[in-house]
Image (tube, rainbow, N blue to C red; front, side):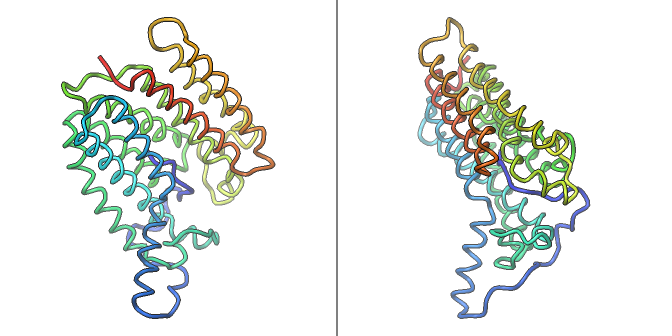
Length: 306
């Protein structure tokens, strides 16, 4: 599940919209081709795509999947994330151009919106067999998460259900990894719950810096309805909740590792929103720090099992 950037609300330009913005600078054909390749790479939202893929790879290796199975899981997640990122930029190209957003290759003409749509379609087509190769149930769970992410891009971003694809996507990740194990064991409930809570927090943290600009563009997702202050107050709740679930969920008393994770997560989840007025991405950085703590705790506990 991609923690994507800004997306158009329902009613934006159709998928087949022509490229917008100023075309690539004149120059040798090779330079233009290289520019388009780089633009296509940047249009997939490489940061979130690689972060989610690395998380899936770590979960796969930590849960005891063999080398080939881990490669399949990682490839399935990567192609799914690429499809979501490209869909995001292609769908939002004209609105990004009108808003003058920087770093948006489909909006500034570095690469055509149709080419980005084509890349999204190819990535999605690859994602289907790669996901199902991990197992029928595991593949179905992962493809459901990818579908939710596409629905976020195309419709849910601008609604009160904007949080739902994040919850579904992050919760499905440990479930898909567990179901990819031989015999397809059901994931432990606390891994899925922690993933879902982190997904909810990721949505709040990713949206927080741009609430005002998004509202001006007519986007009314859950964080926009809560407002800046409401989102800052709510953000620590799912972050701490995810760590608490991982600490208290497994049988037995909380050990030293769980207690340390609660302290670190508490500090990071509170510091991020508090520093948000001085550093625009502070809340997101705090959420990433908590996610790193939770991943370490999750790997220590075991991501899957009967």
